Length: 419
Image (cartoon, one colour):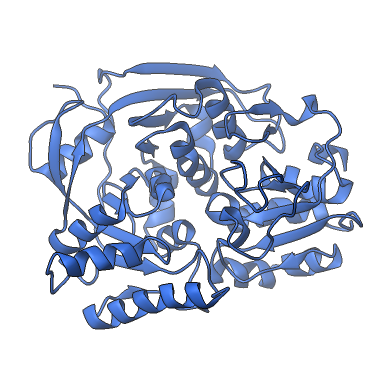
């Protein structure tokens, strides 16, 4: 029986020769993670179940990234729960401030999540790691607790939708624009509990940073996973950082798909998702004048070094508009250091942008850039629901880093080529 890459990974981890869509399977987990919001609930469930020890101290990561550095007493207490559990269980991967990064940028960077893995995380954007050719998906805190105890989890095998991207991208167009376009076409529930398999010559040519961005936002279409078949780019990314062996899987040529979308993206412009949905997408060139008050460049979606370079290309020699505040948030400590060493920080500071330590911060309305009533933000983040970044009467527009940087300079949403 022919299988997709997702089905092959699940079959291997279930110890079965094959699986098929809608089948219930219990699978071995290669890596599990939680953050400062979700892990305390998992730890509570772990204790209520009477568990004494985690299944493997080197296969679990606790990443306090959402409200860190702690913004208040409540967030400090949340992280204290993680810190004490990590010490009690002798977990190898607990990341303190000064070493922590945004989880979905940090774990691939460290080689802890790898091709062929089954990865679960108590965070919906765990699907990011599908860019490596892994079956990675978000789960609830109780599922994380069960996995921490047993090293296993159950799934209903998803159907797979195939997306083929053809052509050659224009300047300033990248993975963020492709995934925004895709969500705009199929809707925020268009891939509900499906595996989105992202393929084609355009994907083959994308660097890993753009692939991670695309897989990150698969959940915004409702997908279980956004998976990219591994190739030479994948190998080059993981070979120097992998902490353990990994395996490449590919879909069979005659595998069955629930749907196939095939697009020539050569004419695409940078895309913007308007409030209040990641599916409310339009090309930036078709937007009217939209004044903005804040720009956020960062997050697990677009806080990587390549993203900061794109923003710096636009900001170099320019100033952020007087009525705009521009926040730059490198996603990890390593990205922070490299951006500083490359001179990107000098560009940001000269442009009068503010630079933050790695944190999720404003993405989920946590801290480091909350919006007031009536304010608009352009953000390289992944969600723009009502009240996502602050006041319910604020607005968030999603874009790639170059559009965000250009909008900071112009004071309105604009194509980077126009600044």
